[in-house]
Length: 193
Image (cartoon, rainbow, N blue to C red; front, side, top):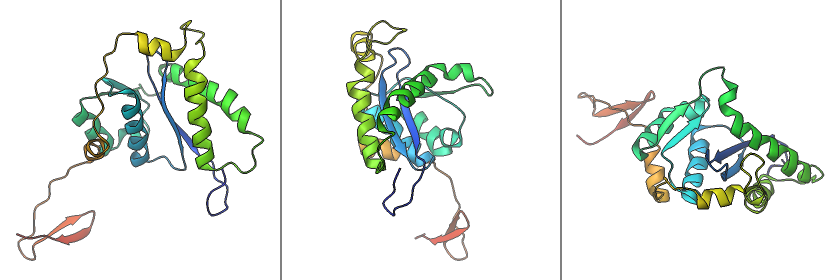
């Protein structure tokens, strides 16, 4: 994609897929893979389609970060990382990525001025208007229909602020008696006694 400063960068796609219905809950492109961006995308998926009971991810550093783990625990979401060296556990999302690459990326390949904003806008349109509404080969019905007609076990999503507060890590520190400071990642902060 073409960035605001005129350089070209390769974005990373983040996606949330409902396991039962194969519904694409949220897909967004980012320029980095960090825990902050992972939890942002995950929060978007929660707010669009509801809070899930269980989340399966691979073992990437963003997914295994302390902030992510603590947030999922606070929200009551069971985190089930895939087994190491077990690509078959990712089969459903891999089929989704193949659809995204085969259809969406093919539509955008002749767009020379593709920006991250335009890519995200096109991705949302493709997800909501095409992928979620087309008959899924394995299911025999569109993912959106399967999602809406199936038994719901999801919960209401917390607000944006509650989600933001959930995805943080906590550490205990002792205040130095000599100067009333606390060190966090080798930086001293002075706090009232």
